[in-house]
Length: 160
Image (tube, rainbow, N blue to C red; front, side, top):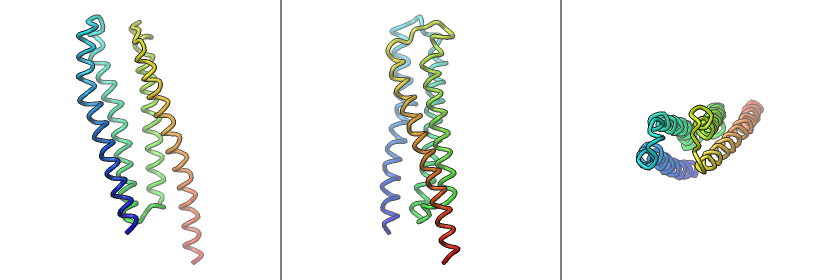
């Protein structure tokens, strides 16, 4: 019964995070990009490429959340220690690494390709990249730890 309560809390937290992320990436970002386009008309050609990049990053985060929800559903079915959860933690790690790389690209490509200074915004992009890489590293470490736990559990089950 405890597993179901933990799973429900994790589902609620994940749903809140996914909804907030979807709002930021797919509702607020276009509004903000439109305001930037109005304030800096010389950057208008970057509107759609920039928005596409933001949406791509948002999609990568939502893919990671899909793996998260699958893991949480298994926790609710008392299948916390299984190879599928370890594998999907690995996929979350890959998604977070991809998001970090995309944030780095967003921080440096406008200046490198179009010679457009993006100003202090690049600091926010770098922080987002660092947070993504940190979460990816944590997910990768947890996937390795869970793989070992699953192996021990299987060995223990065979002994009994």
